[in-house]
Length: 111
Length: 112
Image 1 (cartoon, rainbow over the protein chains, first blue to last red):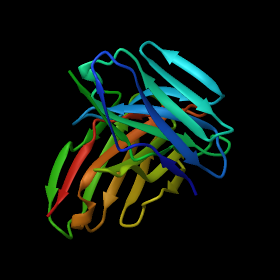
Image 2 (cartoon, rainbow over the protein chains, first blue to last red):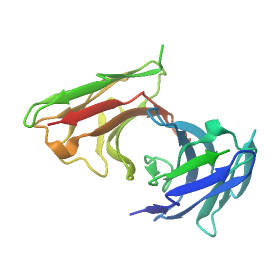
Image 3 (cartoon, chains in turn blue, yellow):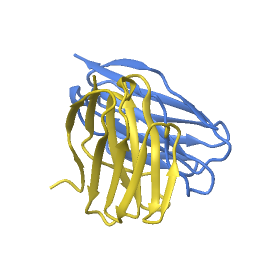
Image 4 (tube, chains in turn red, blue):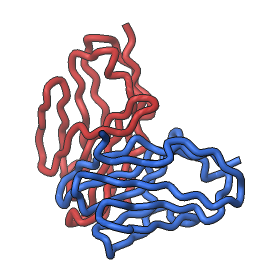
């Protein structure tokens, strides 16, 4: 089986930087994804890491360390609209398996 | 128009009723999924299908069934709804080899 751990809640100040961590335990590993979900909305894809290192997309970056079974999502220059839930998700094995999601981190951005 | 469309968006029903949630997609993806979301529990996989002839159980398939009528259509059924199936249900699609899912807007189901 697999399990993913991420903090349930994070609060940060507008304009600051916040890091949301995700640790996973899987019987195999293919890649780590991140999703954003605003209240009342559907999850939307942010990033995907299959290899170690940092991937940057605008204000958002995602990092993966396969040896540590660990990844994080980094949000810079926080804006109020970044207040949302963020989910990490893993794909096990060869990739021919569905994503398994963490329970999500609720990010609140305050003025 | 949305690429992944779910109907109905909201449904209130009574215990014991049969309910079908429908999902259709115009993305041309072979892979389709049904997830359930409950507060604090994230997204949990109910069923998934990698092509029209392929149906697989997910983590929480008990009490649910699915039908893949065509590449573009994947329906979720609750044969006899119970209150603890009250949740937000999401359909999603993907292509092979990526970590990206494309979600529908969700179907909120309330079972009284």
